[in-house]
Length: 274
Image 1 (tube, rainbow, N blue to C red):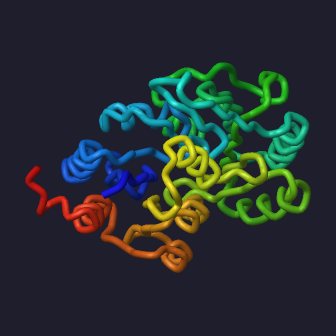
Image 2: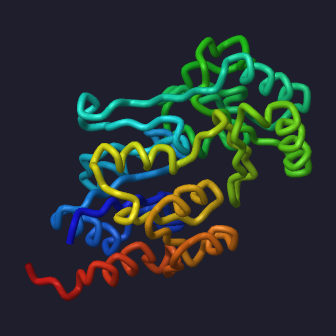
């Protein structure tokens, strides 16, 4: 079989609810790499929050972070052209001022692998810092002097929809907004036109693998474009209905090792002895 490109989202897809890679999923992906296929991670997470999984899979491939805002090769950066597409600084500053006026719970600005916090140890901060200290904290327009890769906003639950609408009305042409699933009611913002499919196209071109030999797995709205782009888009059983509607196939849930279940069947891995 000709080489395929297999793109896996992390949370809710490859990872269990306890944020681990199961033996079954790891084994299937290792086997496919041995057979000459390419495995890549495509996630909304920054690299610092996905590096451990990249290493657990012993990958040597480019990856998509920040939903396409940062596409790079962690192991061999000289073999793949890094693409970092940050938000315009003026736009970011206006968004931050809007959040300040609404007194949201917290704001995190990411610049590649550095992050900046409005408030320490408040709201979502403890869950996403991974024991790494912020580059700085305080009023973000005073402490951040670079163009942000992404902005994470943690509003009060009752503010969420109104804030999204407000930001859309003001910046619809220059930003992309995503809402995170439970338990965090987070709004994630990156530059307009970015999504996981953008990064996956670049990686597929790098490996010279056509669309019909791309398989992509996901579960949330930030996976929509990637599953539509792939020759075979696979929605997880625990995925949102909108994603299942655009997917070619729905597999088992992340807790049921849906990634390996599909791959074992698609590539007949259980029938191979070589």
